[in-house]
Length: 97
Length: 179
Image 1 (cartoon, rainbow over the protein chains, first blue to last red):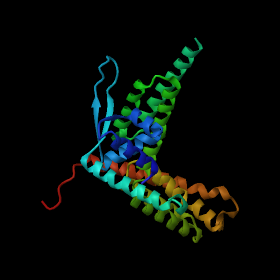
Image 2 (cartoon, each protein chain N blue to C red):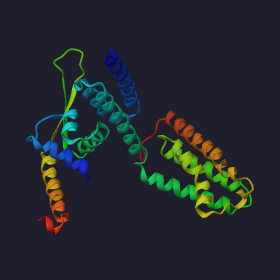
Image 3 (tube, each protein chain N blue to C red):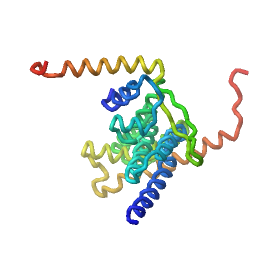
Image 4 (cartoon, chains in turn purple, blue):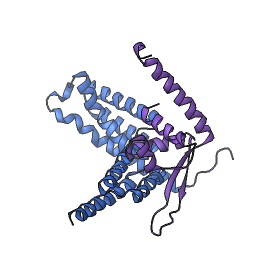
């Protein structure tokens, strides 16, 4: 799993699996839209992510897409994040510990 | 005033990029393009909006490449057929077997996988130059090296014939087998 995907999962899991906007996720993860959206669509294909369109209260504005982790996605993300952090710990030089 | 012009230009280019994003994306991924475009309404800075819109092009190219190269069995088959026809041509005294093989393979691949059939045209037609370059054996092409590209003509004809055959077959209703 790429570091960008891990960052997206962390951001999605961070706020207790609430609905998030794409731009909001981009700001949290520091990823550009061209990197973020392919990741979101892959996570959606895997069944890890659910999305919905939210109608804007302002007239003339298009609806926005919202994202959150599914139950499967949430548990898979926890596993993935745990694996990533244990790998990072194992790779850390001995003098740091 | 200058800021207004910059904003106006950034918005115009962003709108243009959005159109390209939606046009380039495969149909089953277009909703993601609409989602990316809709997010721009929440971005107040023109330059940031432009960067966001440019990301749409990156996403489209990414998705396009993924769709293009996702059919691995057909790519492997096409590559094997292209290399076979190239090897036959390099060891043959006439061009007829190569032309015949490329026409037949182009027809088969276009019939089998008609979506973006030009992929198979280039794969088959460019196999000979690839084999020649990889082995550094120019064979009969040492006199006129650009001649190695002539395979693109029969592979194009084969692909077109395959597509025509496919569309003709779709005119006739298919009867269920076993009745």
